[in-house]
Image 1 (tube, rainbow, N blue to C red):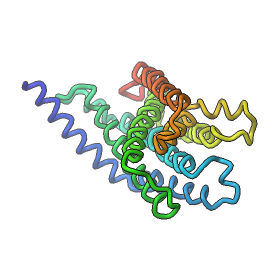
Image 2 (spheres, helix red, strand yellow):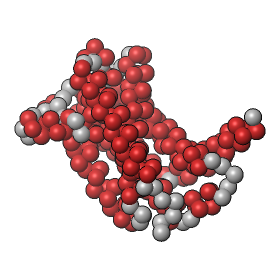
Image 3 (cartoon, rainbow, N blue to C red):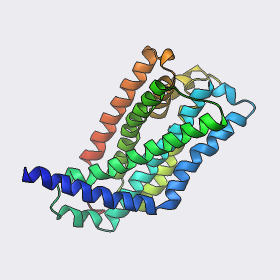
Length: 251
């Protein structure tokens, strides 16, 4: 019983500390929340935006951008900075299990993604008249949790393989472009059927398909189940890489 209480106390303290750091990083949070909203309005006002899919699919793509930004840039950069500053070295000698150190960071990032998704859905309903029922809303938030696993796992793999925070900053921003770019073209053959197929089954495309299916359960199909399985597979692979090669110090 005492060990369980110790774990509970450690998680509580770490969550409070990580949440405080996250809230103080106002610029990063603003960009993560504002960017999906900017893209949302752009996709609905552009003359040829309909070529990218129906309104719910476009909302899903905007939410994908926010989740990718938090998971692939925000999370690994936070971990890399703390690693460079020796925070992890100090935490590892604290009376807390190793899994609680990283687990609290995951929980804080997932919470931020859920809040971002709620903001995006609210904006879509108010300004673009894309509203969801109770079932669709719950399924969408459940899909966001799956997306959190995918892109936090990618972020974990990046921070595990790249020891330098400066190098990681450049790499994270570089891989954000193809991940989100491919998600945009997963349901249109404007660039050819081969590119559409690759886009649809990329991490961003698979998650966008899953999210669109969750927002419209009547259109849920075998392809949506395939997207779910693809997301889980991506999560397992990237999480395995990130855990296997993660270093607690930058040296």
